[in-house]
Length: 610
Image (cartoon, rainbow, N blue to C red; front, side, top):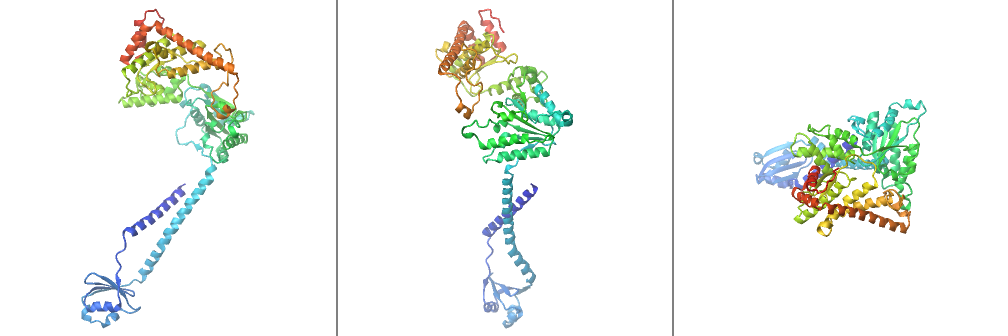
């Protein structure tokens, strides 16, 4: 690499020298050459006493006249100046400055330099072009080389201490670490550690971080490459890169090879239209062959990560290849607290900061989301010239991460503000009164993202199972804004469009996926959300047109039932609806305590608050 840089620098110098020489010659022409005259003219000028200086070099006589003109003449070889001036009156040469220059040695070197310099520059330029061509050939030859990056051993290593949560995943991977550290411990018992480990989880859950932690704990080389880096437009390049990668891994064993986003090359073969992508399939075939071709004593662990295990080829997941699957879920409340502690350990937190409270307000957040949250809080604190990150900064950052920044520049008209306030109040009242809905966290009519307002519900605990009643209550809450607009203004705006979309999706899943309808405990259609042209093109619906019609009718029935329930609740509590909406127009934002206080003071019923 250093040699290539030196040759490139030399080539640049040669090219620049040629360009500067050409510019100098073009913009700085040589002074006008003296005029050639005969020897008789030279002698005549001396006799006329108009010659001031005479300079003799070899056979050439240069002289200047009193008028400043330059002339030269040629004398015979071997003839001296005295012999040339023999016919001239000596008195007429008394005032002339004469000089004889010995140019024998100077002429040789000057002529040699003048003749060699152009050739040197041309040869240098040709060498530069040849080295450039050789460099291009080397790049072409390295086209099939692996693009894997090896972790710098000098940098701080990631260990399991840097990975919070995922306790079960860590326990699974401890065996891999122990095997890389003490392989004889297992081989002496005849045990075989899996050659391949695939990490499965949603984006941002820490799959790559976990793989780095395994390499850091085992203190072995870590090769990192993305699945998309294998695939090129030329067939066979990906397979060549796979071969080169595994050669490097064997030379550096024990080590870990980590392939991120393996679904880029590991998709189900033969599922696409027209036979699939030949380059991708050849790359996958080579990966399968290399994993089978490992020697038994080669301590190379292949780790991969994906968030789409459903599209992977079955041959990739069979025993002997990626036969160990480690699922990394989104963190629960305890894990979120630990993750926040890691991402805030280098940030000055205020003394009254409660990370457990932040963790409770962030259900469904991945590790990457929590890292972004902590970073946004630090940016906000620095922006406001604070010395530490406060609880308020963290809570504001939650809203920014979830819903986007406040768009205070979007000014609503009085009518739009009124419609938005009633819309959000309708959501809040229906959700507050139905038992299975999550508690209200905040109501706001300040625009965020694409929404003009927002009603934010937060669960008090992480949930993994959802009942039919839970879905029905959420549907009614979602349609609270639609019902309010229709009840208060007699028509519906474009505001509830997103609510209707979400409600329709929930109702459709209740019928087709969860068996929560009168159609019985049957799944209609494939139970996955895959968008894949090949499979979709060949897909055959598993139910008749009659059932499809019943599904549509059932979805409509569920949504209409939820709308009716929301409308009935809002009519019973119309007084609270008006009072809370008016307050919201004035204050723009209400938190949970303010909302409950307003609801209680205007309530005419003895309601049991959640």
